[in-house]
Length: 307
Image (tube, rainbow, N blue to C red; front, side, top):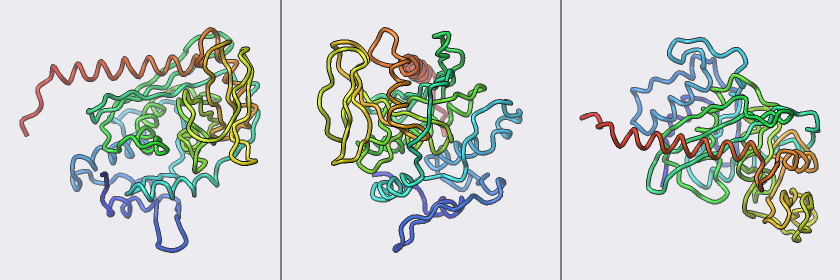
């Protein structure tokens, strides 16, 4: 259904899938080696290679210097599988790196991350906003639009949405103290929802805030705002089912990286003012939709090149 060339993996020298022993994640080569010549690849490969060049060599973007406070992305983790089976394997291996501890009570700059796409289109828009808890205002935002050939598959959302979110994060000039992602975190069949995956890249505390249930068993929480019940897999605690507004459907909260279950739920509740979803997610969702709509309208009005 989707594939990238094997020599793309070897050129980057990052991810290896030996037949026995599972996955190896190796440190990258010299940064110059990441600047793969895009002329050697077809158009689909070029999109991904160009994105990686942008992410890990920000000073080369149009010859301009990188913003002084841009989000740092960890180039030691470039998990890009070449099949659905390998995507699942990669998730299991990377889940060992996730840290489920950390206090977020002093965090004030909270980012929200969300994507938008249209059925039948290969374009996806990503949006990141930074919401200041103390002022209840958005103080920074960034967007990106790319083409994707990775289909939507339940449990593998990160492989579709992560590239465009990373591109958007790279445009931020303010580093958030925590990130709330529209999707799952630890409450995932392989313990690596998109919030976990993104957290490993950004090395920031991340939280998964799912609007619907993906994994785990739970009891319905009480109807009062702030009521919560644990999300379990057997005896393992995965997250919380959290009532963010009285008598309104709860959301499914789980830590992504560098925060505890309790810290994740508490921060999400603090970010919910008058609606079911936390303000950073609401703002990111709106921005992603507006960005995609604008891009599609522009493309529809602009003739394609003849070649």
